[in-house]
Image (tube, one colour):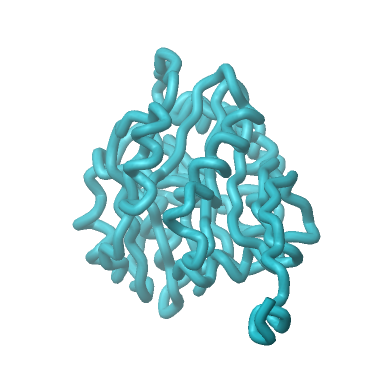
Length: 279
């Protein structure tokens, strides 16, 4: 053994284990590495409604993957691999481990361009595009009446959300409402909360586009002069509208599904996501 090799520390074994609170600091560092704006609090919200796996090399977090069960549908999210570990199959290992936690039901995720090929190999099929918009919000008066709601309204709103998304996520909506703002219209609702560099509005659930536009306008009015983000299904057709409110197109992702169940359609439609991670 040479002197140089004798001084080199041994290579730590890579392990995949359950994701716990002790891994949040390392997970936060990973999300910052890939340019995601998540704060510790944003990771906390995700983990409050999720379970997951983490790859570690010694004390270092080198990858994460989470799954959030919302009734019969599970959302896979926060899938990140350390840039130094890419190309070694770690992403596939993490995906296989997290998929095993929710095997047997419908799974959904929003893919980055880099992750898309792997998800396709694992059987996921693209369903639609998500358009991320963000910027400094401009104040405009909504064309319809919008009032403030409370956590007490979430039971009714969660049913609207279920009709729109197929997801049973009352617990998530209650967590958001407890810390954020509930916006109510006659035919829909929106939630507004702190996230990343400022605020995010979502979900926006409504019977019609006019109601969705009014809810988004009110969110922009309440955050005017500050940073606001929204994630829109492309089919919602609101990109031009939110751009006029100061929220420019800034990327997005591809919504994908594995073993989708028949849609249980109702009167409501999702015009904006809670987030790309949480649907």
